[in-house]
Amino acid sequence: MMETLEAIFTRRSIRKFTGQEVPETIVETLLKAAMYAPSAKNEQPWHFVVIRRRATLDEIQKFHPYSKMLAQAQLAILVCGDEKQEKSPGYWVIDCAAATENILLAAHGLGLGAVWLGIHPRLERVDLIIKLFDLPVHIHPHSMVALGWPAEIPSQPERFLPERIHHEKW
Ligand SMILES: Cc1cc2nc3c(=O)[nH]c(=O)nc-3n(C[C@H](O)[C@H](O)[C@H](O)COP(=O)(O)O)c2cc1C
Image (cartoon, rainbow, N blue to C red; front, side, top):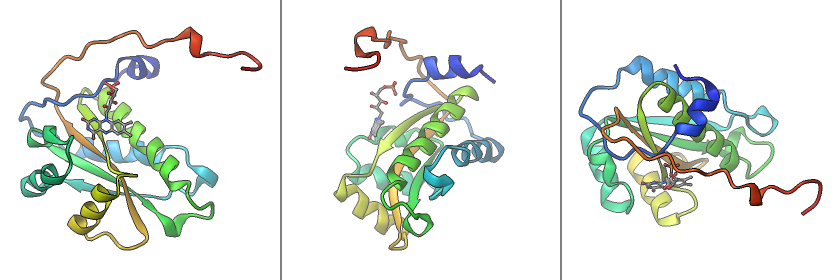
């Protein structure tokens, strides 16, 4: 397992995967990492749908324009926000983003490859995901993470931009 800062600095989106199986125990660790994300008022307003069925992974590619990597992915995790868990309306979007990032970092730390697929706020994707997964009315699809063992080595460009940092005032 990687050290925290190393995982943060070396995580990149992986869109090419080997065909090797991802064990259920690892998937559970990713979901646990997601559930340890911070959330507004600690409401933890999330649910996760684990998708391994090939037919479903292929169906998503028909309407999601940037999801072709699902053809090679071993699985995907759909991150959803639960309106009923919220006392602060609207924070599910931010909370689910934190959970999604935790999945990405945990996956990378375990040597897996992963990429975030955007769903919210693209209504056409939201509607089709709701239908495909029979989501109840209070459950909002937020993002999806495609996962598998990496079959590419991404570059590591410098991203630290001192000019984006402001001290005390703008
Ligand atoms: C909100 C959000 C939506 C994204 N949607 C997609 C997507 O639909 N398909 C995809 O291949 N990558 C998607 N990405 C991944 C970004 O393209 C990627 O994070 C960005 O290019 C930076 O590269 P890195 O992840 O390697 O650091 C998304 C990332 C975020 C944060």
